[in-house]
Length: 298
Image 1 (tube, rainbow, N blue to C red):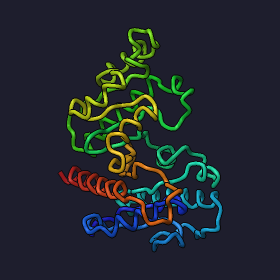
Image 2 (cartoon, rainbow, N blue to C red):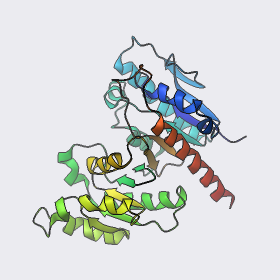
Image 3 (cartoon, helix red, strand yellow):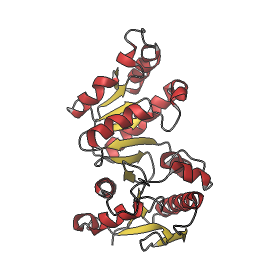
């Protein structure tokens, strides 16, 4: 029997339990299992690995504490080889912090729990975007977009595309930091002074202006685009494929995927949440697990 895939319930106040239930009620999605659920008792689903108890009367901090504990437990299961991959439902970052987990999000927490060099990728059948920097304030971006950050993103992306997506010679583009890639220094020198040399060193293309590079990738010119900061990359992928894209943490010792949306606290409990991205996340995790197993056997 194949090793199961772990699914965390996310923030129990959000739509995580609902979209998981809807996804697993789909015959094609359920056939990708087996699955084990990790999360609190009382969140509306029967869990295989409980991490505490949830009550709707509990605080946001308690919800964040349970969500963080589920991520920890699922990671432990994956590192121990008890599960083949992890799919995570959305978390609330403020609640996670209030619950005692001082991480900007899943990506940074998983990196620390595993000690891996990781990169956040948003992937769909139309576009793949990797973030060189993740959850930081815009004012901090110029200091964070360093040679080392871009080289790491390029290296992790190349390995991930090869091993997890089966692309032997990945074509990777670098998105510029400034409008029009600085326009010869008129709108900033970073693209000429930093990004162009490091793109050459990393053996990737660019930097190309943000207003064209994602379109070129969607038309087949590139297998992935490295974005210098969160919103330029996230906006591109969500405009292109919202509800069908998947968050993938490249560089981990096991595949981890997640939907491309948040907790949607405003519609939680109303039964109207769309499970499409959760289904896509489960499907992609299963595909990576299968592809990895084939590579190991060959």
